[in-house]
Amino acid sequence: MTPLVNIAGLGVAFGGVPVLRGVDLALGKGEALGLVGESGSGKSVTWLAALGLLPRHAQVSGSVRLEGREILGAPATELDHVRGGRIAMIFQDPASALNPVLTIRRQLCEALALHRDLQGNAVKAEARRLLDLVGIPDAGRRLEAYPHEFSGGQVQRIMIAMALAGNPDLLIADEPTTALDATIQAQILDLLSTVRREFGMAMVLISHDLGVVAENCDRVAVMYAGRIVEEAPSNQLFADPAHPYAQGLIGALPPLDGPRRRLTAIPGTVPDPAKMPGGCAFAPRCALASEPCGHAAPSLAPIANDRRVACIRAEAFRRALLGIAAE
Image 1: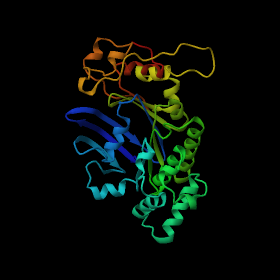
Image 2 (image 1 turned 30 degrees about the horizontal axis):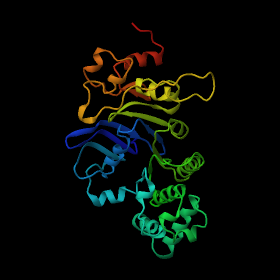
Image 3 (image 1 turned 180 degrees about the vertical axis):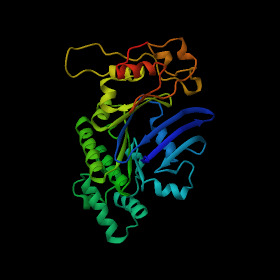
Image 4 (image 1 turned 45 degrees about the vertical axis):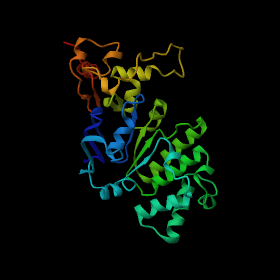
């Protein structure tokens, strides 16, 4: 079956410095994918590049196919229909994505007119319905308000309403709960889960919060230094991470039950893209690194039908999962 979105060999460079180094990722219809990793690992850049939203000076290579049709480098007229109509994105800072001098009605109606060709009373009624759907009280009156008249959580709800305006097949949520308190975070995540079920959408959830990803995603891809280093079903990744970097991320989480233990922090920082180490980019921070790790960057290799890992110990992981004794 053709995936909804298939990314192959996606690379991005700024001024000749690569920041994405061959990302391969496929997403099925209705699937929820979590994308995790430290700041600077390339999570947001992956989808900005896929949608043609990077600055003109960015050098983008590879392939991005939407239901088999190439959209990377597509004409602006075609991308205008894809962005918002087929793939919608909720940006990390929702307030900056709204025009401060235009009412919510005007901005929401513009999206409805562009992607669903609604006009007159029909577009106003649909705008009000979308605000009701995302839980904005007194939606009819609040349509005439400006972005600064809403709280942070309400602005995020408005951005979700705008994303839903084109009935997209895929919703990309980039840190949708940043700067929100815990109660509002839970409400926003519950809203995203509800609208995903009602609209039958696929979703990509970009987040630093591993707990949020574990609860809301079917599958997880772990990114480090511009590459995916592990990809697995959510329950398997959190129960038994294979890549040392994924083990470090999960090891840094405090347990909610059982005996207390010291958290295991990952030493060092994500390498500078202009000074990338040879071989595996994680090797300088990896407690399990050996001499071969510095020779070449390992490819993302399957260790099970639905799991892949980029590590020279991939064969050992595969044998462990299958219960095969080492020779």
